[in-house]
Length: 180
Picture 1 (cartoon, one colour):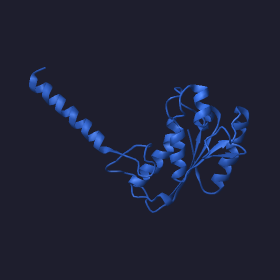
Picture 2: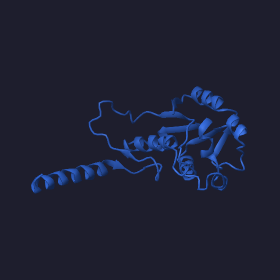
Picture 3: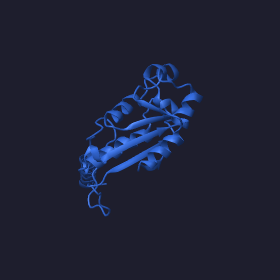
């Protein structure tokens, strides 16, 4: 490869990297999580006058217990990407049920660190989501089975009889179900 070809290749790669970085958007509602990308020339336009009500169902966690749960991050991304399109926080209603294999993600830092040797990487995320108005709900049946109580859980987590019950109730209130 000639020097000019090498220079041109490096230049084009750096332009691509800068464009990709410039195309990323920081959180507008959830500041530290849920980075999004601007999408130009959308074929399916976002109805920014609508109210979006969604309930995410999360039953998986990160294999690496020092890494935030990408499925919980999805709620932050949902809020941030719609805010970047011009929707107001009040138009975005978010809830999330957590059960099954994601149970440990709702533990407080003290208990999580005792169990896994690191602070709970989801603790701050859950706090920021609840500050943004999201309901983070632990399945009461999972909580009972795993020994999760109000004393050892993140104080922003709500307890329901079950994930099934919370899903039914939120859906009856017009929330759309999204499973992860």
